[in-house]
Image (cartoon, rainbow, N blue to C red; front, side):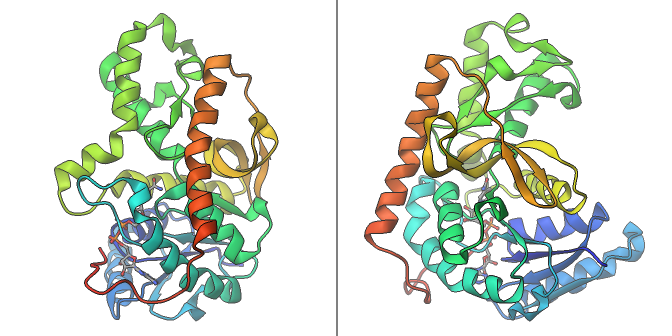
Length: 323
Ligand code: TXD
């Protein structure tokens, strides 16, 4: 059986995800985008790189969802990206509408797939993906924690002048300014971070991590980060297609863990071919738990906003630019 990952949205994140998955020799890729020729063009270009990159993975690109047939994983990246000054929540209405037109098609053509939502605002779009798909919660996850933890790890590695490979970190909570990096669970080659850096410096790097997405948006001026997000998605897809049982921070459905219920939020999970095997419950201090609950409260606000005006599939408001 050939492994296949479907990717919806062939923009910056989607196209780069396809590249990462092919060049890691993970799976065939099916790329879908609403813009005529975009997915087909990127697929052909990526295919023509195969002889040089040395893989024999197949890649197809189309506007139609039939090409998803047989996919074990489908990544949803379609939607608007942030512009300078925009919060992730500003994207809610437009992207909810886009997801409402996509998820039913994904469900039809890849009914057994595990869905990884990437579109912002991440936690609420993951919730919406779950609602629209009707899939079990173990088969719907959002990508944020792997990216946020990677940013924190990178900043720490630079500061401490060590390899990024030595730094292990966990970020909990919603994918927004209230995310909760956990220095107490951050280690450098097994050594707790607290014994390596003063608390104020750790706090400064945590703040830079929280603003990591906005820092890139401000520099780029048009569009948002995509290289690191695509790497994060590739890691999650790899954990699934290779049944790795990796412990990764993902946006997952909570049923009482951390005192949170009926909510998608960033927590460490075990990820395997069956999707979320289990949510890992870390012991938190009162302050850490309070920060997680504050962050979850932000996500709940978006869930309530969406419940008040559920999305209808359809075209974007006129004049809205995609990409
Ligand atoms: O950490 C995270 N989760 C994120 C999230 C990190 C980076 C980017 N994040 C979000 O992903 C970002 O805020 C956006 O909501 C999405 C996609 O970001 P990207 O940078 O890839 O945006 P692009 O380059 O504009 O690509 C979006 C593509 C574009 O090609 C559109 O034509 C397509 O989505 N699109 C659609 N495809 C299929 N079907 C429909 N309806 C559709 N609408 C737009």
